[in-house]
Length: 175
Image 1 (cartoon, helix red, strand yellow):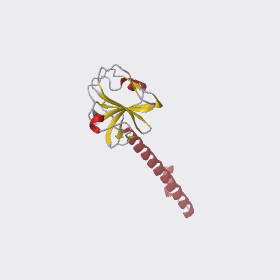
Image 2 (cartoon, one colour):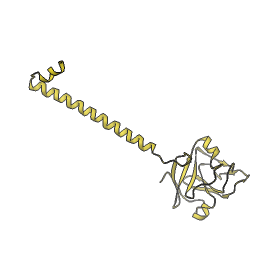
Image 3 (tube, helix red, strand yellow):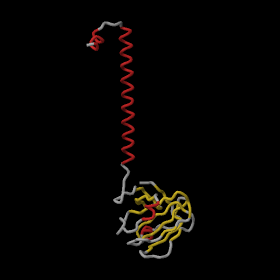
Image 4 (cartoon, helix red, strand yellow):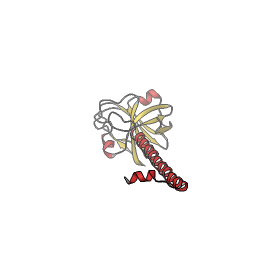
């Protein structure tokens, strides 16, 4: 039992102090690593607890003037193509926010739409254009009046009911 000899062996006070200091330093390193891992796990858990819609899209806050709502974020070509198409409805306090890689003229259509929507073209932190109460089956292409990076779709009549108009400020990402 060699390990027993270590604890039973008489050593000098200096050697005992050095051994104790080494053990304390090792314990401090172990606790520091434990705390670091704990912080990383908590941060990862917070990041993964992002609120999702019933359709699996990330939700973000959008403020139009003084009106706040939650919007499903759509930022991939596949989700952009589908949009709100083939859905039966959209909750009253929700929208769908399309995010594009760069500012350019955006063109939308009503493919597969089952309900009327308002389309808000967003650029330079404000509403730069509106298409109000666009009905399912609308055949004309709907194009932004200028290059934009964001497009928000909401239920038809939302802008009229809430008093949203061109020029209103827009904040994205506020809950």
